[in-house]
Length: 281
Image 1 (cartoon, rainbow, N blue to C red):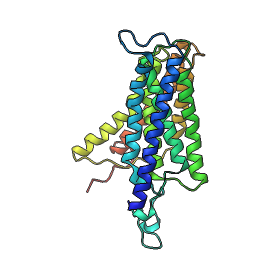
Image 2: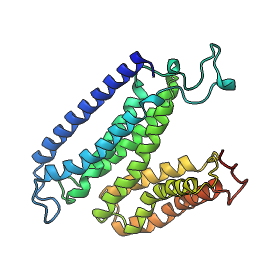
Image 3: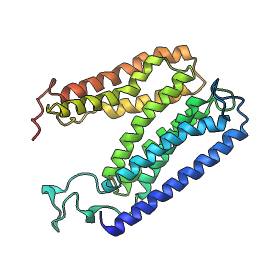
């Protein structure tokens, strides 16, 4: 990354850290003002602090992940024949954007909303906050539609944006079901969705360490629609409008296809389905 580009991106990242800190402080004041009577039993901390601790942990991951991948703030996709007309390559510093861009800022806001959801695992589902996780997670889902559309409209689709999008989707599929289970809105076995991607990545990592081939994940017309279905279902599950027994019954139907796709994808990259992956060099 060139010097000017690196400095600009790092300054913008520091600005994101400051925005997250201000947002967290404001939310703590808001939670305290709601007068939530208690947090988790046996924890001698104010409710606002109990909410803030897991939220801060999730927000730290969001910011760390963004900082780690700032070098990927370049156009998505390789150039024809691997080089541009001036001889630049896809990884050339000259091809990296000097600012995050509006779409990536929206994606970072998604990360903040997912982090806010994480905090409610430490809070009892009283009337004052009963809707809060569903509102935060639902807003994250709506912004998931916005950031990609913005990137395409402005011709600013980036590798960084794709990585942030995947990371925050995965984080949301981890923390939102955990909150739903803790609040009695989803059965504990639904957490298999939270574990699925991590198990998939762990399986690929084990194969690489053992020197076994790991193929490329083929395109799929199912992954994105299934992810959208899960997001919509989790939002409804978090909202106190449908009886928990009904949510649990629907969860079986919603969960099964997603787990099947994760299993199929692993079998494909491991070479057990379709063509076998080429050995690693």
